[in-house]
Length: 310
Image 1 (cartoon, rainbow, N blue to C red):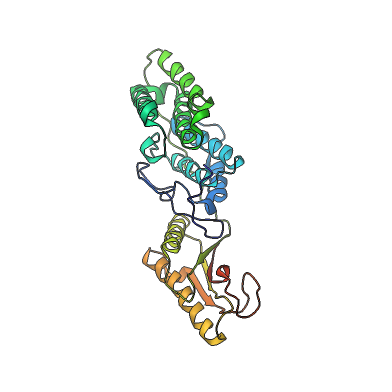
Image 2 (tube, helix red, strand yellow; image 1 turned 90 degrees about the horizontal axis):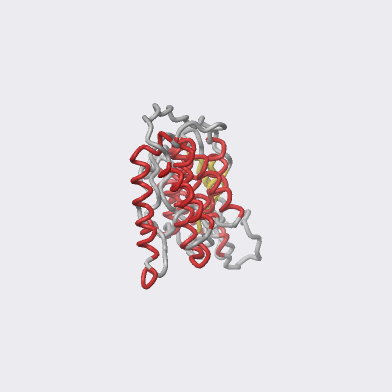
């Protein structure tokens, strides 16, 4: 979804759901994904997908990775990140249920009952899945769940097309296949394929501050907590933290202000469980601003702590 709710970070990072290890998708976040991590999570999801999926969970991981890639082509970084992380969760062998439509901005419950329609379809889907469809037709079952989630996501963005669009049609087709399948003894499920541990790609995220302040803003706090989650997933990654200021005020004062900003980020990461030995902290005051300006200019993009994960 091309939302306007995202908060700027370097490329508008917003904390959404927890990282791929999250075991529930029934939260009610203000926004679903983190745009700054969308491409990184999609690349990880695509790398983790089994080349030849075997079983429902692996097929589901593949379906979500394809859907996330489609969303990236549409320019929807928020939902790209969200469904890429659903793919990663499935690749890790964990349960990933279909979307709850209450987590999405679905319009026109009155008079058209769109939420009710989605809720009824979800109930039918879960009934079929729990009746053995995951085992007897894993690829079709995974497609049914992924197409249901696609339908839900599309209803938030473009309900006029989505109410009878391709996602809903493909969901119905998959459900028809599942219901037509004769009952057979369930096959023994294959052990889920664990994604190999991969080094974390270098990622640079900006945490911005208010003028003459070193306290994290609510948006900055969300960003830092999202970074802490990424660092927990990538246990070998390290962090470089560099505090900066704009070019107003004397050099000595700004040097201390940039120090306090860098230490504010370091302290929050430490409070969120990141070991200090993994962090390198420095500050440059007015020197080397991201956006060169004349001395004395108030440039918001220079009131920043640059955080590099690698």
